[in-house]
Image 1 (cartoon, rainbow, N blue to C red):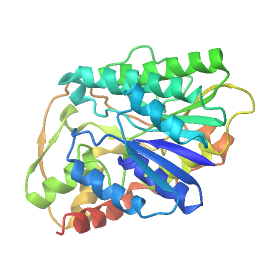
Image 2 (cartoon, rainbow, N blue to C red; image 1 turned 135 degrees about the vertical axis):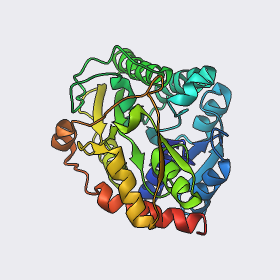
Image 3 (spheres, one colour; image 1 turned 90 degrees about the vertical axis):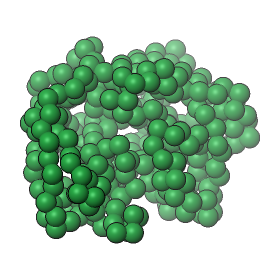
Image 4 (cartoon, rainbow, N blue to C red; image 1 turned 90 degrees about the horizontal axis):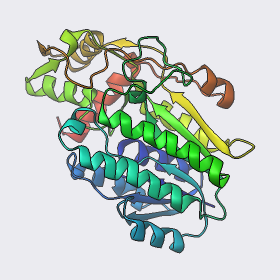
Length: 322
């Protein structure tokens, strides 16, 4: 049968599609090549997928009901959905809030409406975010924590997706699972995220701005682990219709200054750092409680930052021909 992967030219989407194709699944990939960051990177991620047997690409906007309806009509064998298309970025939601509501809220609604019309649908897995935990102080974050105090519009849209999904599962008897991803990094990663920013700044001799005066900790999750977790969840829908949420992270909180030191060691150059105060929407520390994910799916992350960052730097140098 066939898996529909939205955001297939994105960082996580392209990696999930590769994994599914490698094991023999047919994949219909959707992307609209948003210009939030340079689409050249998206084209490069997509290029090797186009040559794989079983892969079909459709350029479309998930919020475009007509385009998505046509897609579903042409690919009636779709039985699973991995919905990863989204407008990411906490800070950018202060700049262009409308695109977040269109893509993350209207787009998610469009996907739910289409999915409930798929007669063969077995499981709908979608990307939420650790941002929904907002300013929660108790660590690690668990899916049972209250998440009714988001501190960014991006987080609001992701929490709205979770609430909509719960409602649709109850109303229409669907099997839906949301995954709260924690700071995913690795080869082919997004240029707006800290690992890419750190590597570029160190290679170019530019200054790295560190917010919260550098007192920041993040649960850095390596892409291979996240893909393995996503596929494991996709393969194990719940027995009865309903909506579930799981964290995908490492459960470890890495100090940002230690992470930069790893970049310095790997690259062989010293970073220039400028300490800045916090900005609206910033979270001080994140860490995922993954006990439920491990118990339910047998999944545990295998790659720490000491191994993952050198892998990312090797890719970064190769991609940028450094």
